[in-house]
Length: 320
Image 1: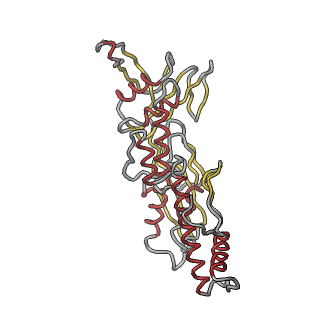
Image 2: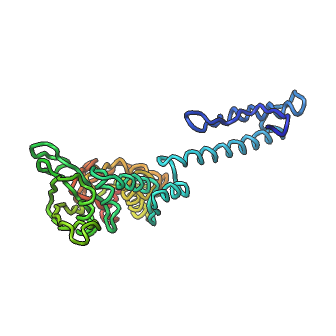
Image 3: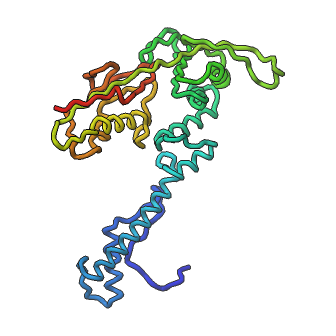
């Protein structure tokens, strides 16, 4: 029950099927002005430059900020929107801790993979298990269920075979993950092989051994060429700033998209916003990407056996 008989014209926030819904601040301001007018007996000058107008503006800002904080709190319960401490809390449900320097998007991708790793017998469960291995940078898993060979992601995958590509990690860990997570009786393929023994305690150390094939991802350097309009406003540190911005986007540390992955397509356009945000001196003519120096393409596609990498030395700047 309310402890006061007072009423207000300020619209309240509400919880609906769509979640927490806050009223527009324009409506809040109108309600605050109505409350002030009623309190002062009517005929109040509503101009925001008056003392009562300043009070109305301040009160509206306070209410609006409170609603914004509540909205952020409710959004933080959704793993798709959570960030910071709330995202860490969701991660702890899966016994996850944030890696130093990882972005919001990367952390959520890890959480999804961790959930998938709890299952058995699907490509997603094997992928999740591989990505959770110590030293693994990335992985890709796909199967060809047909009776004929098929080209998938630029790689010929044999009929009825499981293709596993991994960057980093140890052969024994990779083999054990395949043993524990792959669908039963599925055959593997790849340029590397590993033999592992089933560690199930029921075998008392005498479990059967299995040999699996997998492919070690080829690190593929990506080159980025940036062209800007030259002017006296362009700082001497322009190249260094552009290199840092592009590396952050590529590695997913800019809190935007997730990092470039095995089999992904790299778009030059994904770097535009980060470069443009460096300052008003940035006048982009074009940005090109490729797998060799002086690229001239706007996109470049990795196969599912290639892991894209980047370094500042592979990012060039031309002032025109």
